[in-house]
Image 1: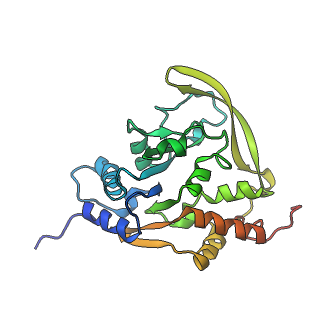
Image 2: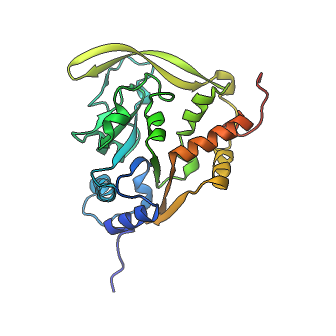
Image 3: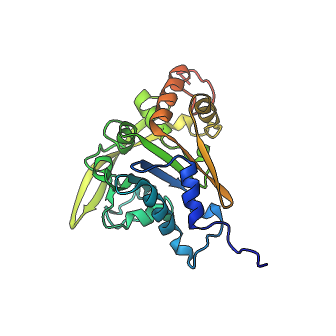
Length: 267
């Protein structure tokens, strides 16, 4: 009997997504590292993002929406132009696969954009704020539109940037909105516009953090995190609105919970 030379196949992706409670009509925010799952039964390494896209869309159908991070932090403090259609994301192979789709809608933000495809793509990623988080950001709209988070092949504590939306709304004392002037290209027109990043204040940059352990431990006490094995790793899923709610409650109790310890406001 021949030993199989792969770790998972397309049907396994479907099973894992269903086990994580992904359903028809869902809006799903997807981030992670597909290659942590190991070898897929496909004749091309480059086809793996396409297989995951096919699996997700087969389940959520045309009534659902996929949203992905399409970050381009490397443009900050540079003279490079952010091209809405062509500037490559650093957020992984799946994000760049979505970005190349003809019907994908990308948020106009030169450093930390989100991109969506599907029924509610325009709602999530059109006419957004010039901030990454806060009112009218994609994260704000994901919370309002019952969106699920899918972490593919990465532990949630290393892949839960949505916590920064709660920090923004709670006005945490260790971050501020840093203003940038950046050139952006939309179709054939180049503009220079003002954008903001929600960054750490300098005196907090060297504080040793606990990699979101406090935040995740608290969330698990009150809400469900679905988890399913796929190949050599796992898929995780949870409700973004519930995550936001629990983060706000925790921040009210300990405004420094993201830092992982209690500090005085005047630190």
